[in-house]
Image (tube, rainbow, N blue to C red; front, side, top):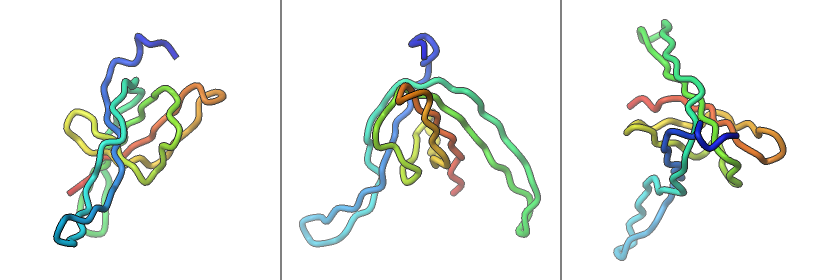
Amino acid sequence: MRAGKLDRTITIQAFTSTVDDYGTPTETWADVTTLRAQLIEASTEEYQRAYGEGSNTAVIFRIRWLDGVTVDQRVLYEGKALNIRETKEIGRRKGLELRCEEVRT
């Protein structure tokens, strides 16, 4: 993996739950790390669903190996939140491919 191809900046976040001073639980997304990534593919697919027309944006990133990345986390990229759908190891812990899908609210 060449450093020159890692031309994007992404942030990996994990869902956390904390308790404030009054005992109220607060659930938020907390930053795990910010790192450089290569954008492999970004595509939008439109399809029909039971409730109407929908669209799905899929994005694939390549990053250097980072231990502990799971599908329970998400990626922030250009102000958009992307759920991690799949992770694939590249080589023997040389890199990691993140297959993500845009979060719809």
